[in-house]
Length: 223
Length: 79
Image (cartoon, rainbow over all chains, first blue to last red; front, side, top):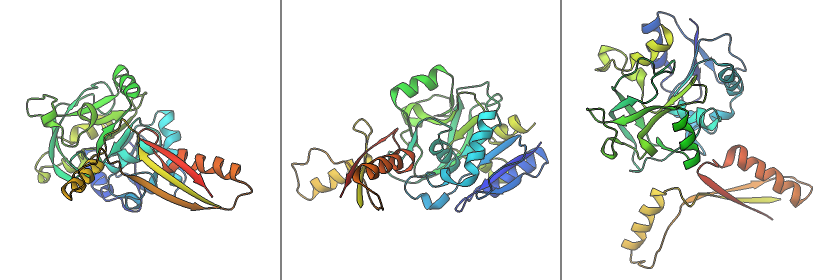
């Protein structure tokens, strides 16, 4: 198992992801500075959360032009699993690997709290063992939007990975923290080897976090 | 040459910031406000042989980086 965690100026969840991967797989991931131009053979590439480039222009827009992104796009197209969390999700969208856009939360507030998500796709390498899970969100721009044609495409192709839900697993307006279309919390690419999600599984990955629900996603890929 | 780029949310995309600004303006007594849309304004100075080349280049910049065409429209003026 070889995994890589990308580090941009302003990343702040890179180490949390590395600790989660180490704890779950007992392999130490390799940290890759964004100026690098290629990644060695990899079984998982994680684009972590944070505030890359201070969220200038649009969240993730600057980072999507970093040198390493060309190789990540290439590897993703070859089928390597790529996971983008929070700002990492924004970066994957800006790099064109995932559909849609992440707009400012409908409340116009930064939201930092635990939420519940329910898997919609249950066959991808990331979501095959997923159930309703609790983990934190911490973002200002997580309001997922796609055009109606794109929405139909991602629905028809089973690309919706997670939706915000309540404690009974109901996907409702009440359980939507940020205004996301269809309560979407995470989506997959067409080939299902790229996942972008706003919630932070690495922040719910050991007992000290108060919840271990996030482990399932890493376990699915790593074990 | 100076390019002025106006980036705005597409008409069918909700603009919560615009709505809040509209409400604030109304509370200041500007009661005739129908709608407010907020956007970005970018100025780019560039060396270019002619307006046509500059326009082509700026449009490419908008499509590749400056605007997110899923949610935003842009307008370019070149002086």
